[in-house]
Length: 170
Image (cartoon, rainbow, N blue to C red; front, side, top):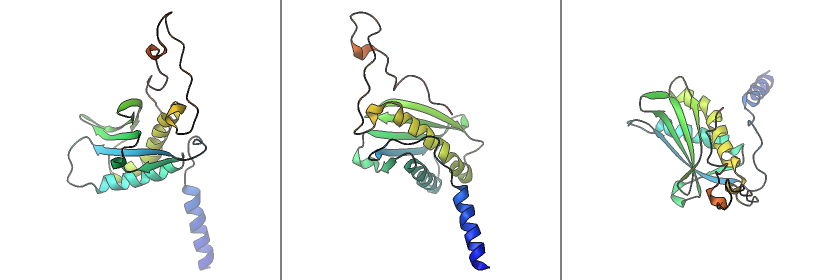
């Protein structure tokens, strides 16, 4: 009887695990550092630590490996939990060598630890879409071909890049 209860409980836990919204890139994991912060000063960081762990678990589903920011990786996912005057938003920005490559926003009812844990899969999907939007950000992947110049005689670098245009939304 105890074995059956444990087996049923294990199956329930496995059934609750969510699948990624889309497949990650094949090959080695893409290294990304996390920079998660509240919009206002708080006394402790335990809520951030729990959210960081859950976000790292969710990003692993997209073949994205979270690395320490002190290693100065190429990609940094900056996650702002709440905005000044608008606390129900989680803003996500992907920075590549300091340049903003992709952005997105997840709306949440509050910033409680349980809500943040529930929002981690959505935030991970926004980060993964920003990473995979331009294949040049993925190590070992072929670089995207540059867009043709908008006007005759203009250089390809003046054409709008697909990696910086528009916000990523869910």
